[in-house]
Amino acid sequence: MVDYDAAVAAVQDPNADPILLAKIAYENPEFGANVAVNPRCYPGLKRWIAEFGDDRARETLAQYGFTAEAFGGPVQDQKATAQAAQQPAEQAQQPAAQAAFEEPVATNPYGFTAEQALTTTDQMQIAQIAQYAPELRACIARNPNTYPALIEWLGQLGDPAINAALASRQ
Image (cartoon, rainbow, N blue to C red; front, top):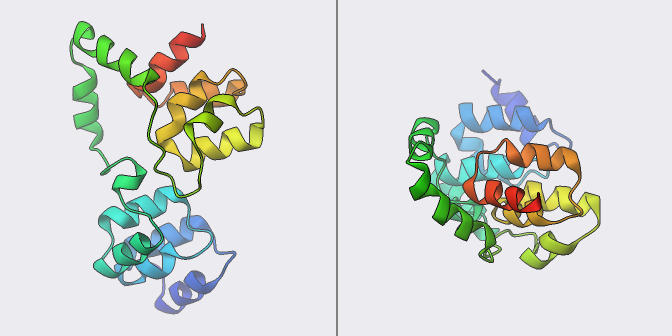
């Protein structure tokens, strides 16, 4: 468990270890709002705090435009996700193919758009879009300029829309 004084120091440190911040948010929910505004708080941690944090933390994140819905909805149980993936292939193929090519609505607070995700040649920007705008990952998968390591990572996510977009590349 993180010591109270160490937690106070960490949430105020702009160079705090993101892993330590996650541990603090988990073990000390009263620090959730402080963790959320720390510059080293990564998007996945903000999503977790937006869903599981206390009221003060959720309100703080909402003021910055971060809600669980803005990050793709509530965190899904891995077993439920796996069971949904085991549906008959003929039922899953058609919606997955349609979802891959529908223009996603950009909900990220960073200003990344579907157009950028589809057309940018800047490898750093492609990586940032993949990290900070999960709703645009299917577009990144369709971008011919996306680098191979990111394509491989996207394929491991198990998202039907991303998988359909990756299949269209071949």
